Image (tube, rainbow, N blue to C red):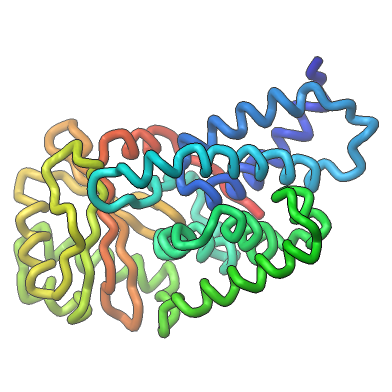
Length: 293
């Protein structure tokens, strides 16, 4: 039976546990489900047998996250169009001070992590983001320490090979360019818009086939600019929010939430737009979350 001490320990670590699970699953709503199940399991644990609460709970939720990830593999294979992680609405703006944490929840990194196997993803997150030792990681993924080290090596090489050549811009610069973009697109300023876009800028939409949207990525400044001016019409209301620790735009048609749009800025230009328009994934914007490592 749960006690106040069970609840206090879990609540204290919840932001960290949520972040681990979200980075493994790429879904805020599924992460909530995993943590709820994890808490019920934790409530039955004899605390006298727990030497390190952080390590124990991280291991517990990682196992549950891996189960959820594998169970949802077929669903992602059958997904209509491009699958993008759920947007993560944050209720704090100081996480950017932690550079590792900021990059780890960025849409670009989450998309990259999607190319790893489930085990590689969990091991990479636990080791590279949260700094757990290999004994702890081995227990979390059900592997030997030697195997966990090998998986971590493969995952690091995979991520390093696919990272951008240039580092993404910091939050201040991204916020400034996002503001300039917002001004250009809401006034129909095609010239101003093109000046902000990289020549090979890419637009990726996740609609899940549930709303009308382009299902394949669109590349090239002129094509993306034309698409943008078609989406952000004069009757569209745009607000700025903090999603995945970067400035993002949410668009409304009347009171209806049309989508959330995250921008990736590299070298002073917008290089990628991630547009999440699947109404199921937009439910994740109903409540802000806390992240931690």
